Image 1 (cartoon, rainbow, N blue to C red):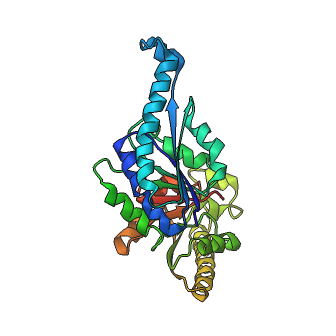
Image 2 (image 1 turned 120 degrees about the vertical axis):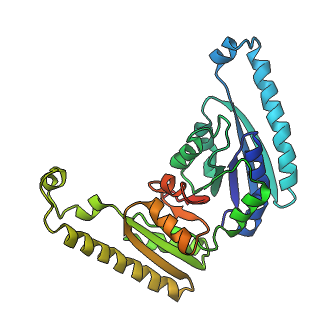
Image 3 (image 1 turned 30 degrees about the vertical axis):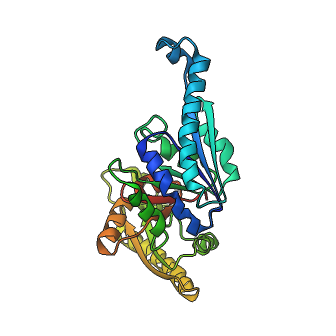
Length: 291
């Protein structure tokens, strides 16, 4: 499934702990794993900070990172055919990751780890810029290796597949087939503007005081059409041995996932680039597809 995995890593405990749990990817057919670290630098800031020999300072940082990551790689090499460490010096980690990712089947990254590489929304930028599937894991500073192992081990047991559109039947089936799913929860969150497109004029949409004619009827009809499409997908999935449930809703992805979590739970969210940031607010793991 994911023969070659790229793991952008920093030197924080969270990032390294998550890396050590990547042994679980052996069950997904992973043979090669690359730990990729970027030493970020800004020459002017280093000089202002009192660093006179910038080259030696950067070389020292690179050597330190390489030694640390080689320790992790040695542990992981017991499970994989090839584990490599790549440390580069650059201004932009995202650009460096984009340059090498085409040689891989999956990028895995903790969503936050508290260092400059993943501070704020940098991990999310990796997902947005990636041309291959990207798995974001919600990191927890107080969690041990077992937390990440459990997520990796069970993530395909019963995922919630968020459909941004229901017309791409071939694409949907291809993803479900590739991941070898046995159970899946199909989620379709409909945007009201999407439902009203072509049914209501722009003037009616933007006018704050004029009620939209047949609003309830239009929304109900659109909801029923989307529900019917999901039923077709479910019927097909049953013929290939995939058990599925579905939910069509107006509202937010977050509320839908919260509802599913309370009712039966889900192992991971699978979605496109438009939805992953919302899904990550609820899910412990989000697999972002590149299409």
